[in-house]
Each structure stands twice: as structure tokens, then as C-alpha cells.
Image (cartoon, rainbow, N blue to C red):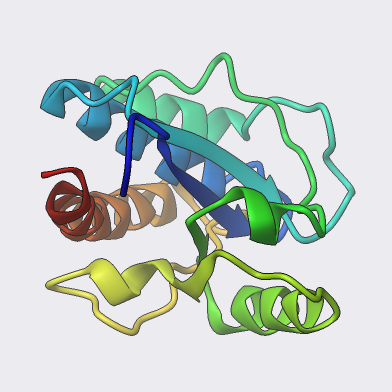
Length: 164
């Protein structure tokens, strides 16, 4: 990587109100702690359009806040075709999201992004889907955060090699 062009990361789930904003917030905090806030650009989006403009689910916000992560400034947006050119990483929370992203990317002539499951970067949950906690109880949001924190550590390590 040359110059100071930020590495851009997009986290993607279905509606962008539970998993991907949680990943956005957790990874943003990890990047800030590493001192790279100006070197890593982070966003989140959904493959669907149901929640555009809405804040994250209150349960996701509460679970994240209990871990010192603030999601209050995030608003749902939908993945755009241009995201595959704008981002270095487009990371899906589950296989369905990944398939949707790959299908979208295949219609693009130019794709810069590495499109992968977010758990690819996880030591403990490698290859597992980050489950959608929307229809479950509070404990589902805790499991999601555990998985996201683990994958975030791995992603941060990969980005460290690119920034050094």
C-alpha cells in the first residue's frame, strides 16, 4: 500500500441493524485502540433495504454498550454495487450474505474488494456463520459480540501487516 490511503472495510449482514453494525462498532474501537483511526475506514451495510436510515437494534446497542462500544451514531444502509470498488474488504456475516455479495460482485466489471466471511479472520470460530440474533433472546447478541471480537482481532492483525 502506498501513501496514506486508508484501508477500507465494509461489514455486511442482512438488514444492517444487528450483526454488521456490531462488527462496525467493535472493529472501530479496536482500530482506534491501535491508533489507526485515520488509516482504516469502516462502514457497515445490509444486503436488504428494510431498515435504511434506522439505528441498530436496541438489543445490539445495549449489548455493545455493556462492553464499552458505542453504536449510537450508526445508521443502516444498503450495499451498493460501487462498494466492491471502494472497499478493500467486504465481509459477510453468513453464507447467504456471502452468496448475495458474490452475485452482486459478479455483475461488476471491476472488483477491488476481498469478499469473504468475516469469520475467516477468527481464531476460535473460523468459517462459522455469525448467527442472526434478531429473533432470539439477549444471549444471542452476546454470542455475536464474542464472535465479532475474535474475528476483529484476526482482521486487525492482517491489516497490521498491510500498514507496516
